[in-house]
Amino acid sequence: MVGNISLYAVTGERLHTVYIGEVPEYIKGAFFQRLKKKLPRSKNTTPMPSI
Image (cartoon, rainbow, N blue to C red; front, side, top):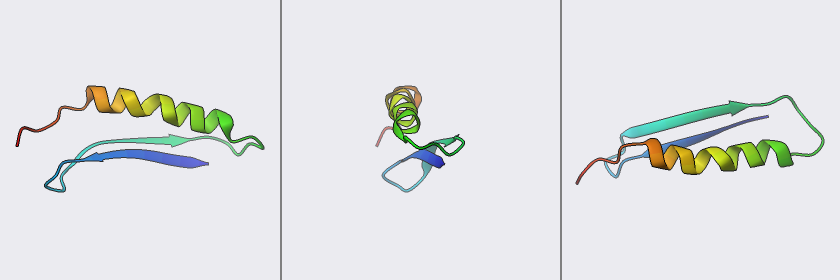
């Protein structure tokens, strides 16, 4: 199972990307919880460009 979080500027420039990989599991809950945890961290640590 794989997933990624990518944040882009209005201009289309990629600002930040996080890739997550896990072994397959019957219950996808653990993977999605880990992905959801990384989203706010990615938003808070990525410098947003001034427009």
